[in-house]
Image 1 (cartoon, rainbow, N blue to C red):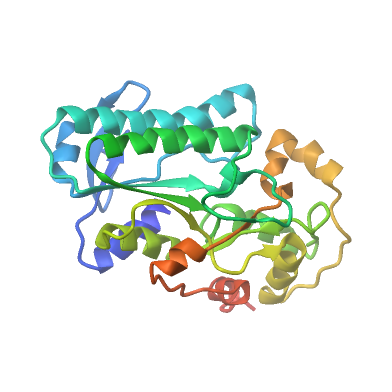
Image 2: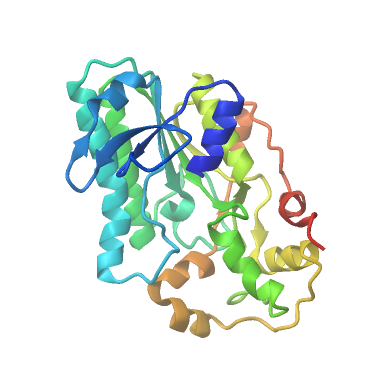
Length: 291
């Protein structure tokens, strides 16, 4: 998402710099060094910036959740935000706003209930990560910075994240809904997600927490059906039983089996318009060129 957002910002005439552990790597972006584990950040990064967009964090779906991995998922998000906070505190800067990602995982498995930004939080692992992550980001308000947090749904992109993983079995003609298939998936097209982040930079009315999800969540069964249609593949298998998914993924299975039906109302009330309101349009943007 960071790469797509950078491209879109550059297209709109912004200057973009990245924070990286290895700035000597050839990059088309200006790069400043930081090392979250060492607690190091190049102060010039902070004096350079008008806005900070925080998307750092170890992938939730990348590998099985061992205790080690869970620590990394948590600390990569919280420690990086804390490091930025400490640096902002001690440096003269002209940063006007801090925009951070979070995730709808904060609501946990909520069945058919439509969750808004004021809904109660869950207390499973992902919810705890989101709460700590948001807590670290909220500190920025103490420094007088306009702070915006986007709770991202499933970000759809062909270049990574959930979509290629869900599409793999469909491509091999083995697509099937996961678990009951009735669980809701709240998704957002990567370009809409990036447009939201850019909107939060440009419009000061954005402040606080927003669900970053398209207005029409679908069940897992509908998602799989629409995906198969977009890819011109049949759906042949019955449902993949939850126990099989638990077996393969362990605790991480809550990512695909939890039901999350999340409201986009607060974002819509800002006047933001989604380019991709419906799943069909979003999937076609990725697969219409493929036959």
